[in-house]
Image 1 (cartoon, rainbow, N blue to C red):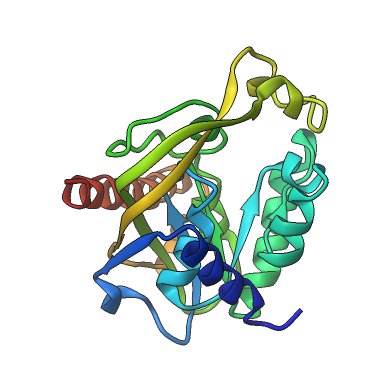
Image 2 (tube, rainbow, N blue to C red):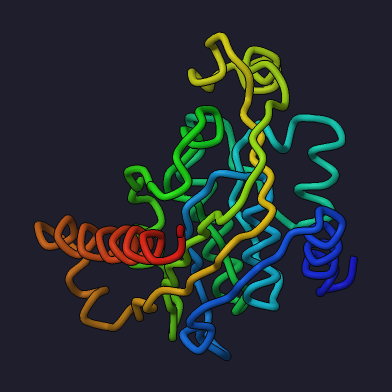
Length: 241
C-alpha cells in the first residue's frame, strides 16, 4: 500500500457519495510537525473528511470491533490505515503505545474523544459530547518534539440519516462493549454538504511536560481537554447554519 493510498481512497469515497466540503481556517494546520488531530464524530465519513481536509493520511484510533468485522476490517485498517484499539482491559495501553510510535515518526494521528456513544446513538449536528481525556494524556506523555494538538470541527450542513445494523449484532464481535448490548440500530449519517473548521492548535511545550506530574498533572490535562472541546464547540456554532 502506497503512503498516499488512504488519502486517495478518502477523496474517491467522498466523490462517490457526491459530498461537498467547505474548508475554513486552513492556515492553522501545522506544517512539518507531528500532529494529533482531535475532532467530533458522528459519521463513518469523518475520517475520510479529515484526511481530505488536511491533504495528508491520518492514522486514526478506532474501536476494537472494527478490527474484528470482516470487510469492515479490510476497509478501515487495510485501506484507510486506522489502528483498532485492543480489548477493554488493554485499550489504554494499546492506544498509548501505537500512537507514540506513529507520532515519533511524524505521522498524523487522529482521535475522536467522544468515544463510542455518538456512533451508537443519534446526536444533533450542532452539539459535541463530553471528551474522554486519553488524548491529552498521550500528548503530554509522548516524548515527541514539536507536537501540535489540532482541534477540528466537522459541521454538517445537509445530511441523510438512516440505520446500518442492529447493535446486538456488533456485540458478537466485541462482547465487552456494553453499548452494543441494547435494542435498536446503529445509526448511519451520510453527509451531503459539510463544513470543516480548523481550530487553534495547542502546542505542547517543555513546561507542559514539567506540569504533567504530581498534583499539577490533572490541571494541565484539563486545560488541554477543555481547549479542544471549547474550540470545537465554538466552531460548530459557526459552521452549522
